[in-house]
Length: 123
Image 1 (cartoon, rainbow, N blue to C red):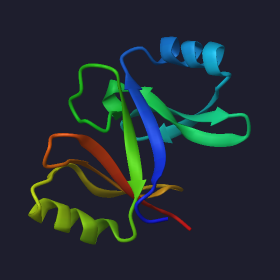
Image 2: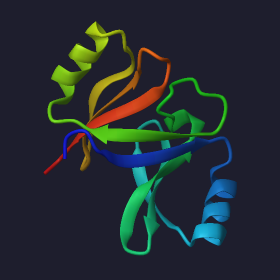
Image 3: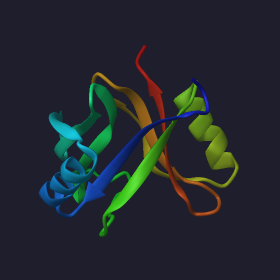
Image 4: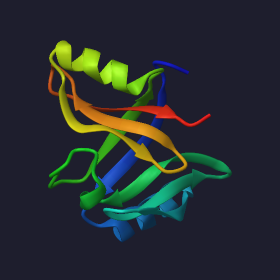
């Protein structure tokens, strides 16, 4: 649904350590998901898919040097919304692009400097 948070992901310099921590503390499990720019895992809490985890080479904040979580919001028309956001002072870090079996994704820095991902998921 437009305007709601739908995905979160962790980019970290030590994926194995992070996965061990969240598996031990929250009971999460991880499934590999192939990305062209690095290794990535989908996070499951029980049967629910709750997010993703990858190395810093997969970070929403391109060039990130420290571990960080990123949140993604569903939007109804990604390309149109990104253009509007640019006109209102946002900086595009990752332009709209297709992610196989997921949908269309972009990453912005809003006018206050906060990182946010937007996505239009496949039906």
